[in-house]
Each structure stands twice: as structure tokens, then as C-alpha cells.
Length: 224
Image 1 (tube, rainbow, N blue to C red):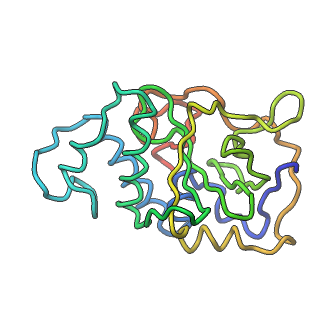
Image 2 (tube, rainbow, N blue to C red; image 1 turned 45 degrees about the horizontal axis):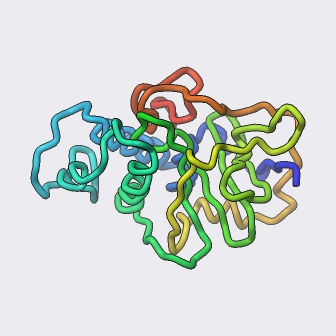
């Protein structure tokens, strides 16, 4: 299935991938992005984190000791990703639930403490994502490796991320305004082939996830 773009409204074109995955609410995008970036800074060690159970700086749920328990950027993605995705669930109000068929996904490259790219998959076999300046995309899910905003391969087929870079956590439900877009009727979706080369397939900044932002990083800190 060629990727399709959401045309129901244009409220999401400035939304970072993690804002869509964690909230989907254009009105609170700035707050979501700020907390996401702050969590990345804490995990990366940009500032000193005390050893106690107080709320971590800038967080609403995650504590300092939660930060200390997580692997650092010197650990391989397979070790970093589960803790990172678990912290994102805690801070942004998701309940892990095996068997739901609903997944939050992250693409992690070495040295990153939060996902370089976030997206979601749903039990109906679809994968959904966006990047700043792009619409929300959907297409048939292929093992969580083909988010539409990453673009297409030169032969026109879905671009497939490496299986050792993509990790997920199953959750009970997505955020209400993420679901609102996902549940929009088919008439609000349109096949999109004009921008098949969109997105990024390579690293765009050491750390990603809100710190050390590269020019092409979809997690840009000025996202609103």
C-alpha cells in the first residue's frame, strides 16, 4: 500500500514525531517537546542529577532515581531502548499492556538516549508517523520498520529501517488526539507519492531525542 497523508486539517505540519506519538495535540506541542528534550538532556548527563526520589528537573512523573537506573549513551541501543521507552510511558501517561496490539516505536542509533524517530502501530495492521513540515502518514505496517515519514527506497518500495535499530513497547491506548487522527475516516486521507524521498535514514545528531540536534533532525527543539 502506498503511503497516505492526512488531509483532514493542517494542524500537525509543525509537529515533531515524538509529539504526535506521545500527544497528538497541537495546542500542547510546545510543552511535550520541552519535556521530551529535557528528559533527553537528563539521560545524556547534560546536567548533574541528584541521587534521590525527588521529581527530576522539568519532569512531572519521572524521578532522579529513575534517571539513574537507565543505561547511558555509552550502552548499545538494545539496552537503552527498553528503559527509554518505559520512561517515556511513565512521563507521558501511557500504561504498558501486553497483548493490546498498540505499540509506541522508537528508532535508536548508537549514542542516543531517546528515539531518533518515534511512531506508532495499531492492531489494524497500520503504521503512523510524521515529521516537522510533513503531514501525518499511514501505510501498511511491516514489522514496525517502514514509517512513512522516513520516505521510500529508490525503487519505490517502502524504506525499511534496520531491525537492530527499532524497538517498541506495547501500551493500553494511544493519546486521545493521536487516536483522533488515526480514527479519521478514509475520506480524510490521500495517497502521497510526490514527496517519496522525505525523511531521514541516517543519523542526524549525537544523542538525538532532544539533545545535540542536527540540521535534519525531526526532533528539533524549536518545534511547536
